[in-house]
Amino acid sequence: MPDGGGVRVEWRTATSLVGTVIKYLSIPLLVPLVVGLAYGRDAPTFAVSAAAAFLLGAGLERLDPDPDLGAREGFLMVGATWLLVSVVGALPYLVAAHGVPGLLAPTSPASTLGNPINALFESMSGFTTTGATVMGDISFETHSHAILIWRQLTQWLGGMGIVVLAVAILPELSVGGAQLMDAEAPGVGIEKLTPRIAETARVLWVAYFVFTVAEFCLLYGLHLAGLAPNMGLYNAVAHPLTTMPTGGFSPEAGSIAAFNAAVQWAIIPFMVFAGTNFALFWHLSNRNPRKLTGDPEFRAYVGIMAALTGVLAALLFTGIAPTLEYGGTTLGELENSLRQAAFQVVSIVTTTGYATSDFAQWGESGKYLLLFAMFVGGSGGSTGGAIKIVRWVIVVKAIRRELFTTTHPSAVQPIRLGGNVIDERAIRGVYGFTVLYVVLFFVATFLVSVDVAGAGYEVNALEAMSSVAATLGNVGPGFGSLGPFGSYLQFPPLSKLLMVFLMWAGRLEILPVFVLLTGAYWRS
Image (cartoon, rainbow, N blue to C red):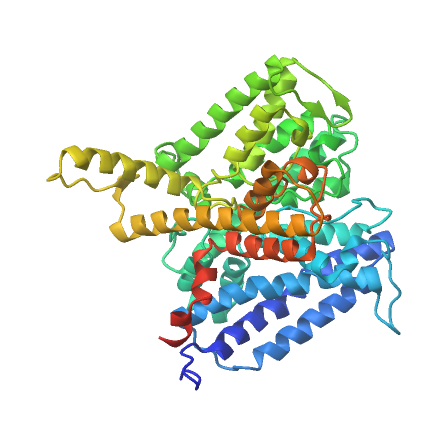
């Protein structure tokens, strides 16, 4: 029954299920514990963090020993899960920086993640696969191998969706799995591939896991063949964990610019795969290639990236948007221009956020092209963020219909996508999301600009816009000091907390978060 006081949401039920997810989060915390044992640093940090996650989750579970999930509880459970998972994910950063009084000495006292707001920012950026960082120094001197692999792992866990993973493996969530996946869905919705929603969740995660392993094999194979000398075992494990979730974290300060051209070319197709609707790979594996080649969203996705790559490559090759490569300056080389353009366009469109060049130092034309790419996004049903291709396809079709019906007022012209008629309610939802996204972008840009000006930190308009576009769209790097080799460390606390909210809202497609902020959700 609903709680008293007019509240119509069973918050205990939602919180109990959040506790279940938090309890099982203690299991992936054991992975960096093993890495810590192997490298002789920070294993106790993760033992303490895993124990804390287990105890917190078990405690929350007791709020409702027999939860019965409804639609309202589904929204609350999804939103609260992402918030609390990010809080728990910040624990290892804080423990490493401060230790535990009377139990553990700090192992990374110089870490910028000792500040709780910074730790929450980094953790939220990880789980939402944003890739924005407040790490002042990304190095094994300041941070252990265990801490950096946890940072990578947070993105892998968040990529296909924490709740989707929970639905796939936890029987107690399978009954309400469809509404949970709808609330967390990356795009207009997740296609039901099998009769049972839990099986669909497992199919998506299996595909995700297979691509991760395939990228590891390719990267480590390049290393063993002598084609990627600094792509050792640790890096070969770390980078697939953030490529497939389109996350972009790297244990190397130079991101993918730290590696040679062979590695950069090898990673591009996996970013493309990560930004593709994973349901299409399921159809492909079932010998139905027409689902892939005939999908209008996939064709638009590939076409947009090809067009942007061609324009940017021409700008780089002719020197209109000169590129300063990490570690040196090169201009006018065809292969280099094509590789830089292809990598950065794919990275930004899919919201991965990797970099092979400090594009913050490019000419204005190149930077504005990448700013535009931040609003494109990957496909629905992918791990990419931003507005997403499927919404743009529907918006364009709806505009064309409006132009046609203006001159043919009696015509009835339904909007089709892949041969299926799109429900008018879904079209209104796409309009609403897109407008809300743009409005939130401008409001947040204004708030960030006011806050940083009041704190005495000067940012230009492009930097302010890119900071909001990169966090709301889960892209990661921006321009200026926020570039791929910079960080968000210098922002004042209020701006960082606003960006934490933007990352959370952006990952959950905005609407589920704003629903929780309405009085009607709680009381009507």
